[in-house]
Length: 578
Image (cartoon, rainbow, N blue to C red; front, side, top):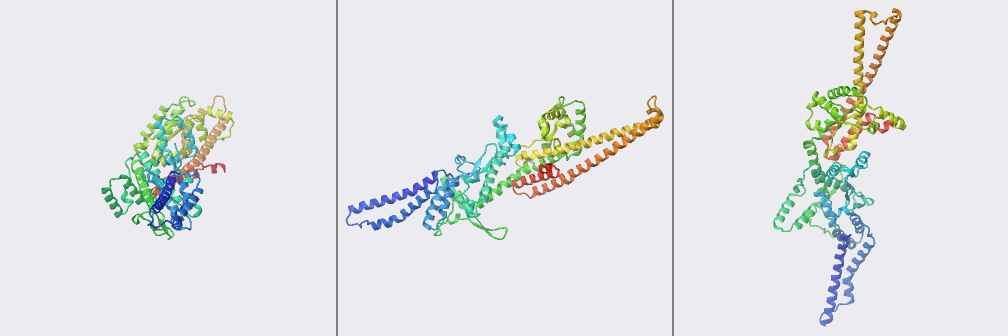
């Protein structure tokens, strides 16, 4: 509103200047008889155009509410410029041009520096910063409950972790876009606004999460060779930094461009960098200087982010580590871990005597004694053990009826053992949280919960096979050495003992057949999950990551990878209902 008031004040000042000149001319004519008199006809002719402009300004002011701010004001001015009268259109466009200058300054600061000024935080701009992230997912809501208890350093860390997901949002009412008049209606399209959000968000991500505070754009990629050389030449002969900054903004398209109707424009011809591009269907798409600037900026931002994530922060290696650890891809490590856990849990009754340092020792032994020790050190440093609470166990054990009574829930809490509260964890921090966000980690743990329990069942079946094999061998050895007399209790007949021995053999045979069926089912289920679900999904993920050009494409590919695994593992809510 202040910029609009300033523009209107300039128009009124020019009108007052005209009135002063007419008054001066009138007084001069009265004092000089030889001069030509100022007649009413001359006065009417000279005031015709100013009167029309005042009428246009009055009509424009009546149509704009005092409650409008920022982009809303520009949208209403743009609507007033859509007029058949060229003089009306030209005046409104001039007012719109001068009114939009502060708004374009905000746009330049955001697109080129990732900065939201104080004016932008007062509902003047179409991008707003939401403290702590604006995501409304359940996992983020649970995390936000503890925000008030975080220290300043932890709070900044939490903001950085959620920076890409919801920390900066679009304010739709402030976008100067009019969908009712076409796809490109208004000063800015919806797609351009989304791309501008990504550019500024990417700059903040680079500086705050990737810790590349010195990273800047290369102006040579935005300007032609002629414009760049001319800019350097003007910089040598200009002593005003503000003037050079304004020239750069004009070159990059950060100003409202309009046609006055007589073929002239608001900027010199050398700055009119509108280009025609060929669309996907062969149509000609006109690209303005601002659209081209934002497009080039987005390419540079995404290229730097992906390069840094892959090369410096080892994104692919961490995704592979998540697969090997939480999806049990490192089979010998899991088997060694199960052996150590079984020894530890069998020596204790309940969970009261299970301590974290003992669990950590078992984990390190499993890593040290298997091929898991050859995983990258930055992967192994993130693996640790978490002992779950009773509430977490209740929420993760998907085979328990969640409508149990409170008494059953209490009994269930009492009967918890070490296997129920054990869980492997993989720490993820910024900038990897942009891809492996809290919702993704929740899916990782959901799949791990299933795979780990299937692995435990398989391990227990193998253990029972070893025990039954030892028993069978012991029976045969005793019979072959001492005969069935060694197995006959004192005072029993041989006939009765023969029947008991036959029933014993039949029971062991039935037990072996039942175990074989269970092993067959578990083996096939694990093979399906490990090869048909996880391996095929990982192959598709790697292919998509290699062809991705933006961070959003990487996030989308990873989300699709996890969603497909959850669905094929029958862990999604739709499958549960069915």
